[in-house]
Length: 404
Image (cartoon, rainbow, N blue to C red; front, side, top):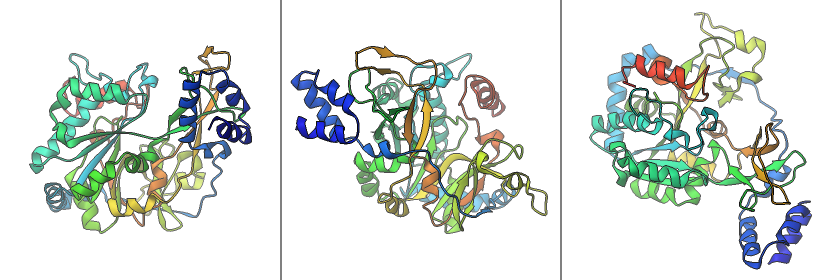
């Protein structure tokens, strides 16, 4: 077994890992062989994502005014779907709070001032409003990572799931991908294993399949999954009005979007690409696209995504056979060198590989862009200070009557 693994590593030009394995005891060698057998080494041939984009066109949203006029009808449809058990929610919580100066799962960050109010708690409180309104629990799937799974589970248990039904919460761990240095060489973690990192927010559904969560979805006869990121403390989850609007539209997916604050705002914009739903990043947009306006004066490419999507499960199943593109991210990654020394870099030193949920949007036949009020539903906590920071999120929480 060892010889075969060594042969594979040498074929992949990873002789330094073979050499390191030879220094290990028999038991540790076997453990490393087992890890290697389960790794996806396609990252070794993944370079820059030089994706050739198709022809873009605007995708107009169902606006706040239009939603307001139909809110009663949409909400009724959404509540009915929740009562019938057709809606599940998926919280993407695999990340750490390192950018906030917080060395724990990001959802554990206390955003309160006078009293404790954790990011996880904010999200559960928002979901509880829906379950009370519908008189039914929404099955909640929480995606963790290898690094934060234990701590996240223990945190929820310690806080009694913030009042949510623990029988309706499932944790699952997202898949990992190897990291490589600037020469394309595999790296070692502090424990002497191959260094890996979570495979990005696009891997959530494949990770649900791998961990058996889709059996839960199937047995519960869930037809829709609302997937959302951990860091937006104001977002509405399993929002009946949003769910009802998507069902009413007949489309197979929906995305909550906000009107851009300015043409140059650094957000991905929901649009059409070759006639299908897609997302164009701000740095991919031409000057003409950035400033193009419609007859009524609104920006043609006006609606930024908030990473809150609704997908129809039968259509998601079709995506499992598609390999999503890998996006490289240049990061500061702590690792162990072959001498056993732990290296903590001051500058980015290695690449991690991520799949992105926006690439799942591109696989859908259509998508309803559903506008939300950014002051009421968009308070991302991405940075310690400045734009989209702890401070700006606290300000918006207060604006919405939440005591901190």
